[in-house]
Length: 294
Image (cartoon, rainbow, N blue to C red; front, side, top):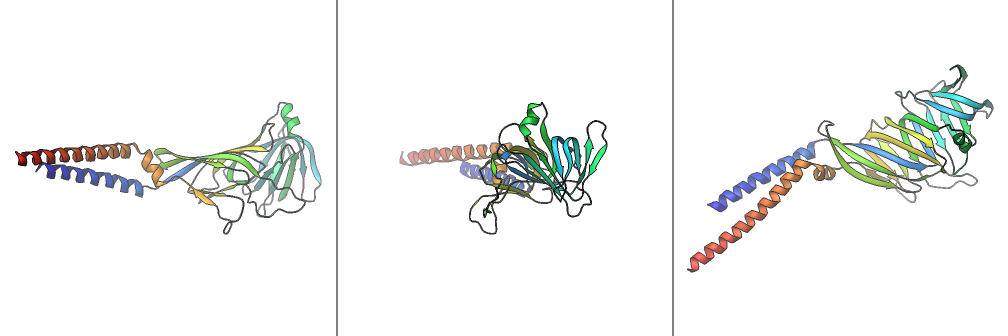
């Protein structure tokens, strides 16, 4: 009779364990990605919520016909939503920022620092070049460009074009935090390393809501760091691949299980209970066996 009660107790505990596991399985998970990388190229589709200007020092601005429209410009450049920005810097070379927008009448306006006056309104294209970022930094100025939008870090490396330098992602990390239970429960979901030549993209409807920046600090290339909540990210490695697809990364159900404190406590309790029940049953069997021999 005691064995029956023990087995009933184990079955009840196991049922509670399974109910919790199923609840965790059905609970939708979103992932917060924190990206930090050194790269020679970053592409950003500017969000409608972006309110930052590009603060420029000793910059040259070119129009589509490669005419210089501003020389040694000091001031801010307000970028229009929907503009595609491409930041590029090879090793210790110049910083090149290209802004394009097929559906915009203008990609943005340049404001003078002294009085805030608009000194140039671009068309659907402008190229900004800072020829010597080190000189700007040595003068005590910063080259930090905070931008909200859809980030595409690195580029897909397939075929090299003769006579053209290919900018690459140099390396970085993507740390992930899972969010569940109506965005009230956070858990660590691991980290992925980015290698030379990787290409990182985000998928889902919120992929254009990353908050981050591009910065130069005197080291080769550029730094880029941003944070985004998305359904999934994809790392595309260089080399042969099917349809240019990489491998997806996101917070998983397994990450959720091993991080959930209640699940850990219940798992430990169930494990100890099964062990004690097995031990007790074994001892009772020995006792009954000896009792039949006497």
